[in-house]
Image (tube, rainbow over all chains, first blue to last red; front, side):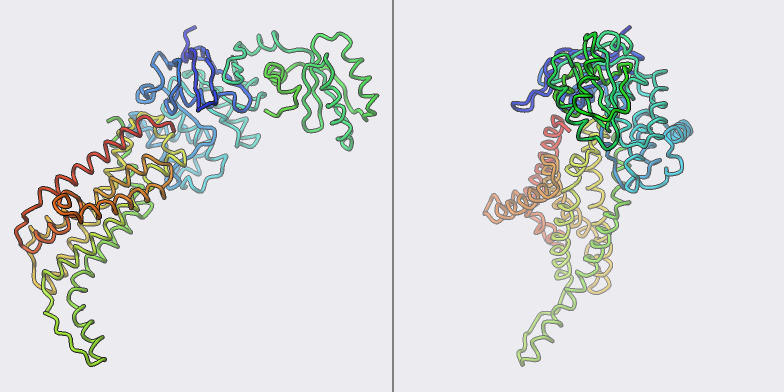
Length: 317
Length: 254
């Protein structure tokens, strides 16, 4: 399959800080491609270079065969882009803003009006379309951001954290909308919410410290990297004991990852055959009032935590 | 320039919707009307103030030339202030807020983005001075008798050219920085520098500040002997400032 986005040896330095360090990436045409990495990994920098908003220190990138960096892909209308914190001219009305985007892309008259209506309906902003954007909530601005990115049906859509400000229902709806884009666009989707990526993306790339860690189809990645994971849940009033157990686990060489959030401990155990018994022994030793201990299907998050080495250190993403 | 027409429409709509065009228009028209009125009543006002102390000041009766001089002074100062205020946030604010990045990922060249903004600022200033010119001319004609309409029109054009120079310099500041206040500082700094250089002999004629005197000469029916120097210098300042804005902006990361 041809690559819609090609990145070769992409490097970006800000003084002494290396944001991208020889990144290589191929995003197949027609794919919904998840782009993952911890904070500061270089995801947004990569997208900024692809949109010609930043220049690479070295290396090259292209979109649909057009070199990125000088704005040519933008001028040809090849990309739709949503920033991680979308900003708009507050005095404009939602519909007015989309009409301008359409006009810039060569749409006119009835075609423009009908497409704007269609996209406003798709993102659930039809009723708010006549209001000025300055009065929109964060979620509404994010919906409008998605709308402007897809309005002109660009062949490549770059979405940086597109659903971070949405409530669960809005998130579900927008993910469905994004999922439907693969019919006519290649989508590069950067997100911290790995369950979202796992749910809708065909392939994912994980980057860390400006370098590609791995790139694969989602099922292959889970197959290749996911180690057994145990889920431990304690009584609600045993937060301190659970935290103490998590600290103790981080010191165990046979434990590959420890992630404690919302009173639930997820523990990666590598290839340890008697991991269940060992974990149970530690639970008893720490006198943890256990509610559940189960072996669960490894998720993309477990793979991510393992590959970026964040969990063992207890870092947040 | 891809996207110029659509972006210009957006910029003009912004000037209208944010009421900048309205405010500039009202202020300019107000000063246009006030100028001949001030010229007419200032001598009477001064005389009445000092008469109470028993002092008598003989003042010549006000003339059309006084009204024109007042107009040039008022609109010149107000215009420069308006030019700096309009241009200071034009690019810097969009960069700071992230909206420039939004538009520049669309089929819009950076040249078109800047051109749309500079044309919109020029349009607002032009609309303001047209309003002030018509109002000022009408009141001057009513109070003192009609001055030469051709000379008046040239005077307005020269004043517009002068304020465009300060707008262009502030626009350059707005492009170079991410802060409207820093841009205003650059505009005011340029204004000060031009005033200082304008006070120098010989070279002083080659600055935008020389335009006000020439504008006055035109409107009062005099013979402008040194109009080429300030006009060509001002056009050059505008061209260099806009080109420098583009040269800087085309390489900026947003």
